[in-house]
Length: 444
Image 1: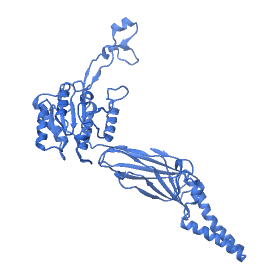
Image 2: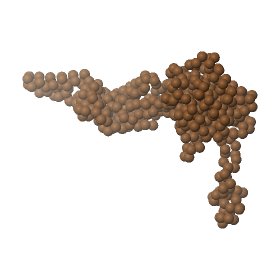
Image 3: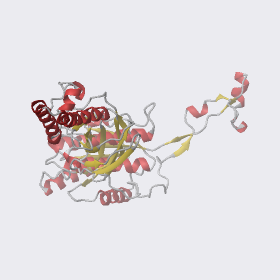
């Protein structure tokens, strides 16, 4: 939840020039008087006219009527100006990260922290046009200490990070004499992730996830740290006491717990501008980004330790980095995919350096159009990985030439498939698993 409580008088009056911090350059009180409506100005004019007539005609009762007409708008300005400074607002996103094409709810809460009821309130939240029209709400008077909550939905078909806010509040008194604006400073950020397609629970080796004995799937082994004993802690199982170290150290020592060895996978995303044509949510580049996000999400949920690299280098430290757990690393990579853009590179030669460290795990690549140099770079990567699957989302070359390049890439040991517009990644994922299983290689 994001609250906003600017200093008193922090809003700009209608038509006024906003100074630093959102205050009108003419001063908060003077700006408040500029918020008089036509009715309020008419009352003040009528009061002045009544006072003048009272002086000319010598009618003291008429002076009292004129004073009442002139003072009422002034009182409304003072009360509303004070109320404007004592109205708090907050915004909450549910959730703050959504895949493209999925709705998110924005909850607004307005609270009256004064001892007097507020007048009519009109809310308007600033929303980028990609998320839809600006929402507007009208709230009736709020009792002292009361609050009101409203909500609206936002949705974007295009990934990215979108700011929401600041919230604008318009207050009016019960008599319709004054209307004042208040703009809160706080805003929130909605992250729209790439489209994530559910993939079938198979490995590119033919087995279902969690079934079979893939040599690099999650297993429990005794690594180098496991044979190094540690000091005994209260509650440790006495069956794990390491007697040789205990006799050598002179204090009770126990064996360390066995640590799980997680299978690793590297996802390579080609971001070169020249490898793709077109734009928009259905472009080839967006299909590649969506595919990379789908595979990352799918393999992370299956227990894999995933890495994301591009043609320019690693996007973020992988889960093996100190202080970063697997779930946090996947979340950071998905956030990076939400805003990833084209790179100025022309070749995939740098991908070899970026993809190092896969430690024999599978390599899943999403690329644009491939030239002969790019195929050679991918062929060099094949020898350092387990299974190697390339999903090529080009569309700018003739189908015959594209198939020829895919065939050449398959000759280097890659399983290469064309990711055409409207093609289901789930079907291609199943096809890749079937082809690798038939070839008897690349079992995860």
